[in-house]
Image 1 (tube, one colour):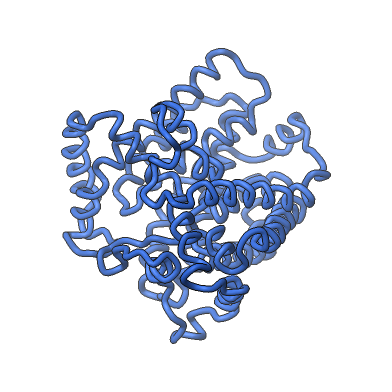
Image 2: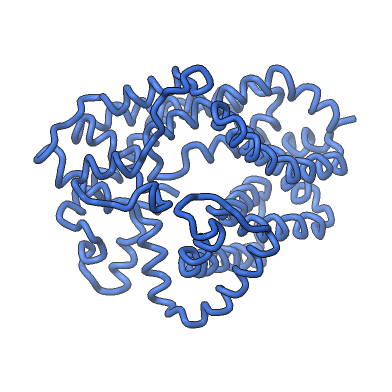
Length: 406
C-alpha cells in the first residue's frame, strides 16, 4: 500500500509520456522525495524481515484442522453483533473524549472477527450467499461515513483470499482482476463526489461529522453518482492519483528544511513517544494534534486546516527527514521496522492460538498501512492497539474462543 503511494505516478508518467516532475505541484525536489521515500520503505522492510523471516510456517492442512473446531453459526452471529455494536463505540468516543483513542482501536478489532467469518466460508467452501450479502451491505453502509471505509473491505478480502486459497484457476484470476478494476473505478467516482457529499454529510459545517441519516446519505450519494457520467475518466484517474500519491508534501519539506528551518534532531519522534505516555484521560490539557499546522510549519506553504474541515499531514517518513535529514532518517525507520516485526511475531506466537494470532494481525496491519500517517498518530495508534490486544488476549479471548467452539 505504501509502495503504491510512492510509486504510482512513475507508471502514470510513462503512460502519459510526461516528465515525472510535471505531475506534482511541489516538483522542485520531487526526485529526492521519491528516492528518500522508497529507500525508507526498503529499510523498514529490512527491519521487519530481520525479525520475522524465521517464523515457523503453519501448513494449510493444519490451519484447516484448527479452523474446523469453530462453529460457523456462532462466528456469523458474533460478526453481525460486531457490525451493530461498533457504531456505538464511535458515540462513546465523543461522550468520553479522554478515551477516544481506546474506542477507535476497539472498533478496529472487528476485523479480527471478520477473519474468522471470511476464512471459514472459503476454507471449507461453504455456501457464500450470506457472506456476500453481509459484505455488500457493509460496503454500502460504509459509504455513509465521512471518510468511507469501503476500500478496506476490498483490500482485506483480497489479502485473506490469497491467504486461505492454495490453488488458483483462471476463474480465480479473473475474479481478482474484476475486484481490482471495480475498486479502482469506485475510488475514481468517490474522489469525484467526495467534496459535495462530505459537505452534505456535515450539514455545510467545516467539520468531519455526519449530521444526516444513513438513508438520506445514500440517497444523496446515489444522486451524485448518477451525475458522475459528466466525469472525464482521465481526469478521474488524475484526481485519484493526486490523492493516493503522497510524496508531494515531502518534496515541499525538503525544499524548506534545512534551507529555511533547521532539522529538529529527534524532537518530532520524541514528542510522538511522549504523547503515548500522557493519555488524555489523565492529562486533559494535552495539546490537540493539528496536522495541518505542522505541515505549514515545515513546508512554508499555506494549507487549509481544521477550520475548513480538512487535515493535511506530513507523513511519518517526512517527519523523520525533518528530524534527522537523509540518510540519518533511516536509523529510526529501521528501528521502527524492527518494532513492527517484534509486534507481528508476538501477536502471531503469543495469542491464544495461531488462528487468533492470524485474526489479530488483520487489524494490526491497519495501524501501519498508510504512508501519510502523522508520526504522533502512527505511534499513538500502534501503542493503543497493542495495549488493547494484550488486555483482550489475557482476559477475553479464551472465553470467546470457548463460545465459538462450543
